[in-house]
Image 1 (cartoon, one colour):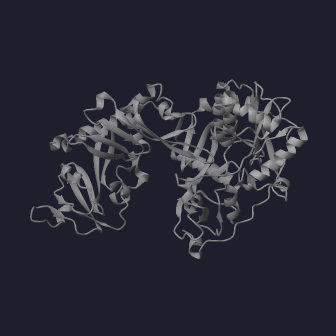
Image 2 (cartoon, rainbow, N blue to C red):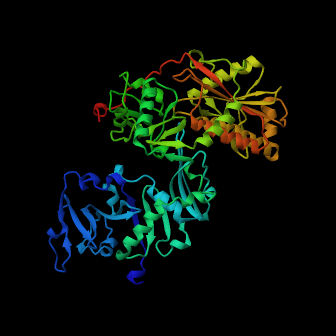
Image 3 (cartoon, helix red, strand yellow):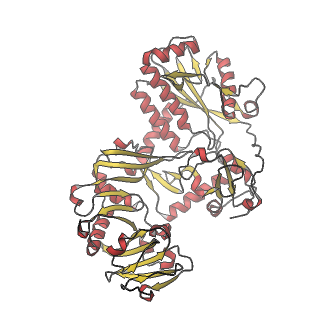
Length: 583
């Protein structure tokens, strides 16, 4: 195949407008490396320049118009050396290479950044435009030919997923829920009108495309990319118009106000703040969590904001502290090189500012569509049971202490201690009301385990699902999904498996017109209110819609106050002295 027909993969980013004139040493993570012109390099017998010093960064002028920078590293990858006419020998090692393409669009000066080899790893991300590639992808990909989507759902345990299909599909075919999820990356085949420029497209903060264009066509390509980024054409498509129902907050003044609100609540030890993993991990590879940057000497089995509150000895912390402190995750007790993340990036919470709703997740503030939130609030508020004498306050000083009779196993497996606390409470509430206790009584449908509910009221045919709202160890979406899964299995009742086991457990026949009640046990927030985060309200809203689709129309929820909460006992110190030093 001739060189002109070759398809190459390009990785492109966009500098923030305010970063156009930033010094190159601030744009690149090159430390104290000296920047020199490539003409200073020695040449071999064929006239190719030879890089010998990996502590220098070499400046190139590509096509007499684009500034570019080359730095030596390891591993081969050299097709782009010929494409860019570098006239530089790149034999066994690979390189960091970055090229800046300036251009003007509608009177605004912008700079695209083309990276080759490992170039993207030395580019300072703080200067890169958020979601640049995603917006280009939304405008250029055929909406019916999407191949992959990376999504995350902000919650007290942020869920991150990747869905891939072998054939093109719509966004909903990739399982996207615009009311709960945020698209981080999107891949697919481009629309016919762009196939002469590029074919496949992947967009996140960066843009990755496959193109047959030559060097002299880079400017044409760049102009088209900026046009696509500047367009809102995708919002006119019915399936893509809802992508921005949850959008990033970019205004630094608003971010500062939201951070101030976060710090105020954090220093009040608000229960509406949660911790989550910053990135997807393989849980079988890790056992413990810890904290560093302050005097913390303990490790824990999960991320719990209350553990963090108890570890912090100082009364107040600042936003700078949250961005300096770290969450560490250990493979075992003796792990001296744990994975670590900024604490700020692991915090999940929500806030209201100027009558708008915001969510902090994975280090970024997001604004949630106001009309949608108002709709959710209206539906949810109308379904709350404001007063009930069926369930007592959850007295932690009583229920969080186990006695000899407390079972330690569920169907032969060790169960979480917190589940035993809940069962003790549920047992007393069932006895008080002459209801049937079903907590941890599993049934099996085609071999798969399901929970019927925690407490069943045979007189009103009501299924009570009860959950304590912990700060980081179990999310309310689990509670809501429990009701969905149980109702789905009951309504289908495959081979009478559900109804038969239901009668075995309760001694009552399974009836139609089932009522579902979600009981949320939670301590009051800093304003002495019983509430739940906005992302949990959205999860409940979606659960209600799913249940209604199954003809389960009588769904409500109630709060139970958790009182007399005792501070947790810290775990045994298992860190080394070096890990306790401030970072």
